[in-house]
Length: 134
Ligand code: CO
Image 1 (spheres, helix red, strand yellow):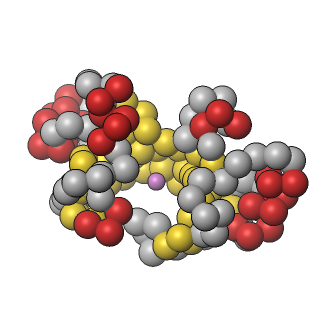
Image 2 (cartoon, rainbow, N blue to C red):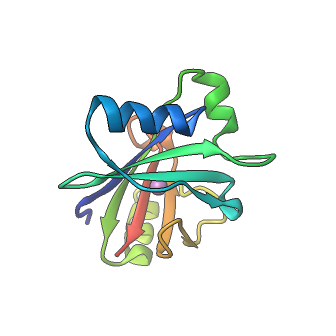
């Protein structure tokens, strides 16, 4: 079912500091910051040869990553995202096996303009897992 690793998302308190670390220490290619108010985050993409890293900084009240940063004050890996060909088929297959889909269970349009779903961390090795239809 799952295909490529699309991205790993890292929650950060300070985007500028995160960008400086990856640019200066690791020599990574880093995008401009993009505010995504509808997702409650400001995002920076780190382009790697085989995948992406996304830095997520909270934006506005009720950011979905605010609680995570309370528990992880230094930031940390927030979720991993795998590509699937057919997100509804993937969802139905996973639900049939007892996996929990977050939210109302229907795909939403994610940060890349493609349908995404999030799977409960308790069902996936303690890791919030995103599926993106590509
Ligand atoms: Co993501």
